[in-house]
Amino acid sequence: MDLAHLPAAFEEQWIASLPLPVEDRPPGQTVALVDNDGFQREMNEEAIAGAYARRPRTRVLESIHSRSDGWYSLVALHLARLLRRRVVCTLYESQAGNDNLGRHHDQWDGLIMQMRGVKTWRLWGEQDTQQPLEQLLTRTGDVLLLPRGMSHEVETPDDSVHLVFAVTGEPLAATATQLPLSGPMTDRPGERIRSPSRPKPERSARGAW
Image (cartoon, rainbow, N blue to C red; front, side, top):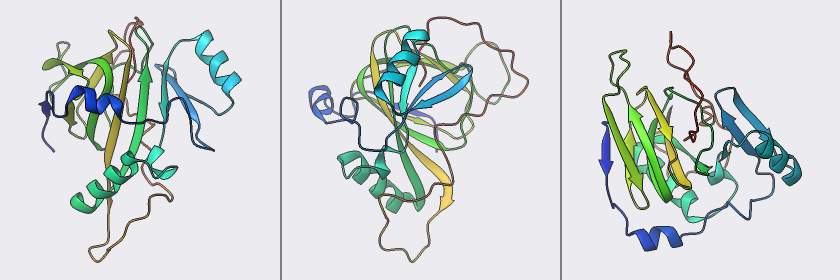
């Protein structure tokens, strides 16, 4: 996958009208609160609220495709059939100023749909430099294609919700005709790989992706 930013790939009003499991979480769906110290997973609403109040962080709903038959599950299914790879869908919800993971890279190709609000992305190439190769904004309706291994960090200038369809390295059988909407995962898109030999970034009011 090559890096690509597709502004207004979807009509803003239409994309914002699509239902998301933010307010009404499916049974068994945990919420991971993420920042530079890692992931804190909670399921109880009181525990989630308390953890967020102590450290405002991006909230992540992992593998939402496996707990629902919603439209995002169908998108993950069709992408998997098209690309012949297992695809996992994860939701990221940030309020302006939420803390984040800092600069890192991922083990999968990411198809990112901005569902609400705005997100700032800083992207680095193969060279280990202080200055990013590119900086861009994703707005409601935008799509960002983020290649596997590309170093990046984010900020949340406004409240934001986006989906990541992670195209994992797990191939599908060439003869497969049907794919389940649920099942065990070998790639967990909640987890991040930090760029090697990277100093810990300064803490600032930033939102995780």
